[in-house]
Image (cartoon, rainbow, N blue to C red; front, side, top):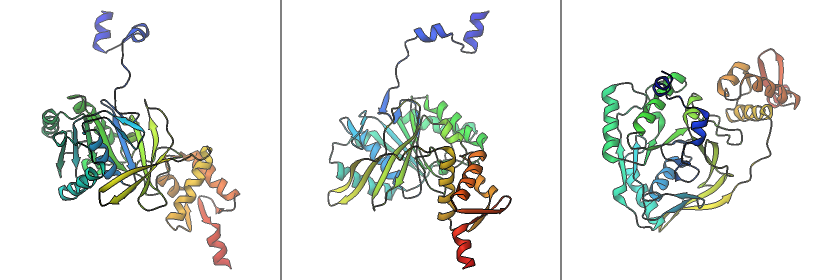
Length: 338
């Protein structure tokens, strides 16, 4: 009876687990995408997400192993399927030519596939629609499936955890058909990406919870320079943010690694919340606000950290709080009173 129960519910004892011959994660892109993994590239608009995903796809389909951003080994040749509801075939064709000319490598064009403007919704519970997705994956047999972008393949409420979990149920079930990994492109919150504080994916926290890895793309100070950084990784090794440049030359679009960017000194949760609150009201040109507004926009910090962060900004003389739950930016008040 015990053996029947263990098999039925997939129960395994510690002794059996320790003695099992379980392999280490098989990396398709070292420390970024593992076999059957779920990964997010997140960033604000125009943060080079689509370009860098296409560049990564090309690197994994050429005939020899390459380094992504001059650091991460890529397994090659892989088969890649890109669902693109964001850019369209003409734009992607132009970008593909630019990147291929910049790489000047022997490309296996038969290993890269695109599906543009599909009606597929990853959170759909419709059996017929799920079957279409399964049939596509069974036909292509991709090692990596790229979704560009997440918002275009989702019909539910991205702030609703139950709706977001439906995506995870779909991609894990469908991905197992051919042990496919998923690379999902998604946006960050309007207040900007703060990689030094952690994950800042737009919508429910279940997006980052479902992921094996979350990587952020930020625009750097100089034009055509970007920063690729790690926000979360279950199995990969830590690395410092990497700056790279997209150089548009006569030979094509060349992605140049500019080296690592040093991380800022670690700060407390309260200091992180205070910094993000200040960034929020300065970027939005807000002169006064209520506590609820901050909690709604920056809920990844938690209510206690936000409350302490607001008090910290008062202590520093940046905010004033003369009425409970209502805050004024001091420099604006000084201008009005002068």
